[in-house]
Amino acid sequence: MAVFDPLPLGQRIPGGPHSVSCSLPTMRAVRGYEEKDPEVMRALSSGYPRFVVHPFARRLTEHLVSSDPGLRGRGLWLTPSGRAAARLAEHLGPGSGARLFRSEGLEGVSHPGSADLAARAKTYLQNTGGFLSSRQAEDQLVRLGLLAVAQTESLFPGDAEACVRADLRGAMPAAADADLFLAPCGMNAMWAAFRAAAGLQAARGRPVWLQLGWLYLDTIAILQRFTGATGNHIHVRDPLDLEAIARLLTDHPERIAGVIAEVPTNPLIQTPDLPALGELCRRHGAALIVDPSIASIHNVDVLPHADLVVSSLTKYSAREGDLTAGVVAVNPAGRDAAALRAAVPRELEPVYPRDLSRLAAQIGGTRDTLERIHANTARVASFLRSHPAIAEVRWALQPGCAGNFERIAHRPGATGGVITFTLRRKGGLEPFYDRLRLPKGPSFGMTTTLICPFMYLAHYDLVTTPSGLAELAASGVDPDLLRLCCGTEPAEEIVGALNEALEAVT
Image 1 (tube, one colour):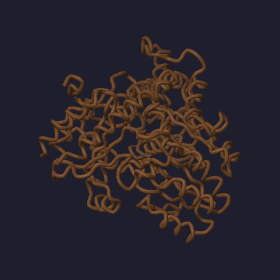
Image 2 (cartoon, one colour; image 1 turned 135 degrees about the vertical axis):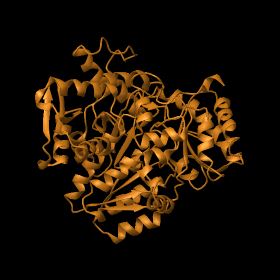
Image 3 (cartoon, helix red, strand yellow; image 1 turned 90 degrees about the horizontal axis):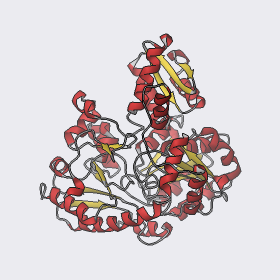
């Protein structure tokens, strides 16, 4: 099975210096990564960009600190813009000793050498998508003579932004260029959409936000940390329960600011009745923010039902797995369209030009790549559903959600590549995962198949504590759930690797 030769711990996936994933080949490695085991951390050459500071950015930061006596003994975080730096300093607080940093085109924040301040800064930048691009760091290292040259890669030779926008208009034909806003990553797009909508709604006396189902961890974090009072964040555990959503909207008249929904959700792959949800939100004056990253904006038609659509272009559009990007789309027919068009860009960070050129070089092949992924996904899902060692399989066309998904799908079978599943045997996760020869690491939506024990990587604090396990159980999330995203390799190779590993738990 040469397609899936085992990858050593820490190897970049797919392999270049800007890869967004890295190999965590065993459950011991996963736990070591989460617990910051020195042996595991030494082996990591990089990691998912919003969780692991890229080696280029680390090297650049170390150089700046060592070159400036005023930075000795202080932490330094580089950001994409002065605006991001100012907001980070504000977040750390006036008593933190945080200072704005500016030097030869670089912006950031320095603070006293405190582990607590460093953790707070890193978490804020992770939640808001505010880290410096690895390509910008690389170019700075070349400028400073610390790297000989930047890596050679295929870049779009023309107007990269126009190329990307043309592709996005094809995916969301209701949107004009004026409705589309690019972001350096999907999380920064979500942050900007939330901030823009929340600002408008707060001015109307509407502070309360609904979380629809179990969402991606940093989206949950935004709602938990940036909605103000505790009661301003309400978690609706079942995203399919329109009656519960309607009751909340009725019981809190003129208090609900908006609803954030993933279509489908990550990782339970649940698709709510989006047309009905959109109509319900419009009737009650609530903003609806929809994130279709799991399936891709190329597969589902969501903009007509939402006020704002947020999507990670790291997934599927950047199919080679070597950059992050995102988009916010404003529904031009929405009641707040004009105000949102003005507010969203004030919250976004700029996309580094070389990242944009790299995205433009890849994005034109998204549809062809997705067709290959869709064929593989249907075959792999069928295999998993029929295997006696598998307890539950979730994907876009799972029972209970298939009708809702098909109602918004651009075409039959356009499902995206994500499948999540659980094993029937208690304690089977480790032997299965350790034996599996598929690439194992974070992220999804690239030509390379990827699998990970998602809850261990996204919510290690929950899978390792009684209170956390109770929270997962209340939301119907199995802590041992595995998230698989099919790539473009031969389907029989993916199925063969899964079948081989399932022998360990059958």
